[in-house]
Length: 280
Image 1 (tube, one colour):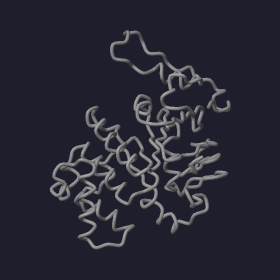
Image 2: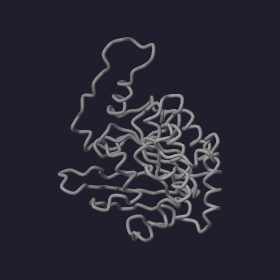
Image 3: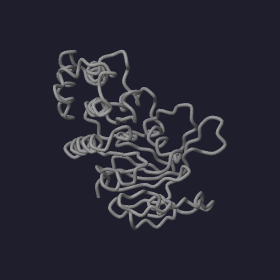
């Protein structure tokens, strides 16, 4: 059996002043595959991603195991994390308009991300950045290198973010709603770019999304989260065979083109979901 890239056991996290944990007892492993984490807003899926990157220093975080390859993420110092974060583990954030510095050229930001982790000259970093912009299918990458963030479209901005995060050849990429701000056509293009790069480089991908159809068609496995817990784990192509009533409720609430015009069902939430065992 292939050694997992990432191993998480009983991860819990509570924000300062919160009465309830945002994430409780989350466990999963990740190999060189595409893992989807889905759920409603507030279910804790983005918190899991940020916890793995150790981006929530003020929160109370605990786990039995939280290991990335040879790194114990629970006990690693911030100095150690600086060598891991961005170099071996990268995170693609939701909206490039808020992720890119508005007063710096896009290309300079991509090149800087590379120079932070790789010793090289400015010219070498520039060449590497332009090559990566070309790899994510940006036309005329040398011209786009000189653009400011307000001069690029949402789709191009997201491609720039993907280029920045993959430039250092990470072994793990966490993508937090990477296509939610894009129209359908551009979304499919960006997903194909991301999928091709993941397959070519043999890396692990965690795709955080609220879009069940996206993870069904793009991921290999899916974790369903409710109120900070994983309530069901299943293969992406078996999503229609979900057993947990919460997962079935999410599937039933999806509008369908050509479907009838009756009102979509509303989830009837059961307090037992907060304590019941995970379906897998």
